[in-house]
Image (cartoon, rainbow, N blue to C red):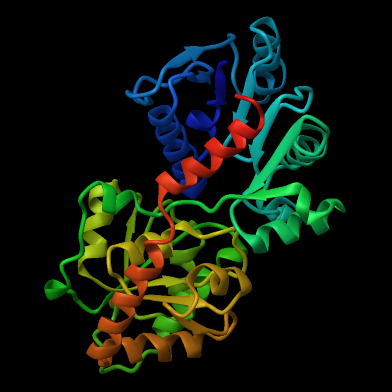
Length: 353
């Protein structure tokens, strides 16, 4: 029996959601010989070389996902469809889908009206009806989804995400060369709480050698905010989008990783940092406590002064850095992509495939 994977994520997703979808697709393709990735037209530089790929339809975006994809599936025996990137066809029944979090409901200003409508219809019609299965990536997210849509949490399956991509690629942190740099993803959206990092950097004592390196697709409001609030420019390095190899190099020389979010579904980056031995300072919110446990330092999410104090504490205490590095590696070992794929494969088996 064919297990089809909705490949729209290759042209429409980014960040942790994209990494999740790619890793799950590649690992399932290694576990099973019946996996096929169904895709719209892809840019020339997008490919998964070890996965069987089938191009479907002529369009892209919502039209492809909601019309052309389900039509193709019905013409080919209605195989099981996996949707690894939050959205699913809401007219198709035989499918398993992931919802990472309820961000579109909690932060509607961060999403277009069309996406919010798609998301609600996909969950209500494409994930919660008979013959469908909804999966999420943390217990905190499961409770939030259940409350948002008024369903029993027991109807939602939990399979944790993996976080060992850099370990699997052979990347490693050279703790001997660590500098006083802290790494953070400068992402867009109020819930990412990145301005708290800038405020913390501004309040560091003049004697501190700490720098904060911002990576990823940067929120364009961050640099103007730093200037307007008077953060010393030498404290901040705006690196922007980086390759996985470049990110691994940043991890190798970082004293710590900052994770200031107000809300997450899981949070891949801090666990990826831990997998390489990088100490993590995280906001004290339920999902971080669930995923990171006692392997991180915490600060009240809305208190930049407390974050600055934690950064200074880590800068000045080599023994603390070593302890957090060891505890972080132990914690990160719980979250592997092989385990994620095995969990999904079990759900597929339960579905008869």
